[in-house]
Length: 216
Ligand code: HEC
Ligand code: HEC
Image (cartoon, rainbow, N blue to C red; front, side, top):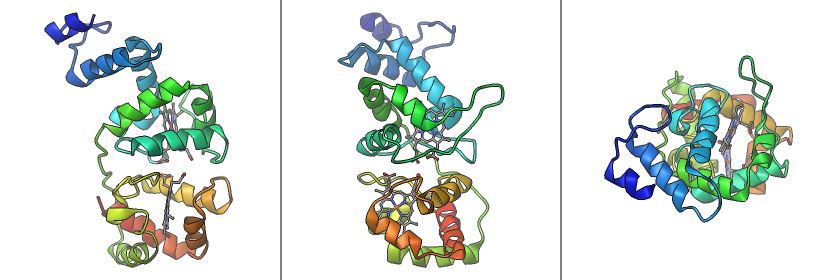
């Protein structure tokens, strides 16, 4: 199968579409995995994620985060955190489908599937989302960020170092909900971060959100 794919990259598959480069890559990656995930199964799985998180993990739904371009380790860690309920996810329902939460989704995945998904999405480019910004608030947010958050969320929140998520160019409505979840204890975050977040007032948070929406 591999040889056939390599020889003829435009070989039509199931859908009759041309086999595009990412798809070929995906099939190869899936075939080379040590476990039992078959190529088509992995494509189905990725498409299920993309149904909410957007093509290549770049979300078009404001309460759903983009997941492209995160670090491999950070992705694995996030899935563990969901599985263990150290992070209670916001619920999201697609029209006509039962409500689905990330905690359940993460628990249904095998370790091999999680590793393959982490590899796949960490290699997709994160496309910063363009959103309306209040320049005065963003300027205030820049100062707060530099003083309190840049230590871990480097390059103005754009760098997915270690386990930290990408903040710059992420959806603002999603991030606002995360601040609520962190402050109410639904999401456990590093102590150094929680301490700083607890000291912020509502306007500080809006300032930071405007700053992250203005950077990429
Ligand atoms: C029904 C919609 C839906 C589907 C399907 C879905 N997700 Fe999610 N996902 C969400 C929502 C909503 C959140 C935000 C959860 C929260 O509040 O913590 C999220 C959060 C995440 C995060 C954390 C991102 C961050 O910035 O911290 C990752 C990683 C993730 N999902 C991966 C996946 C993967 C991999 C799949 C496919 C196996 C998938 N998701 C399928 C809705 C979905
Ligand atoms: C000690 C390091 C550290 C500091 C300081 C820190 N953070 Fe974080 N932050 C993290 C890590 C690690 C994560 C991922 C946590 C997780 O869910 O496991 C994170 C996640 C987040 C998230 C969730 C992003 C998402 O996609 O869901 C937000 C929002 C956030 N941080 C904002 C801030 C702000 C604002 C500050 C400054 C007031 C700050 N952080 C300071 C380490 C830090």
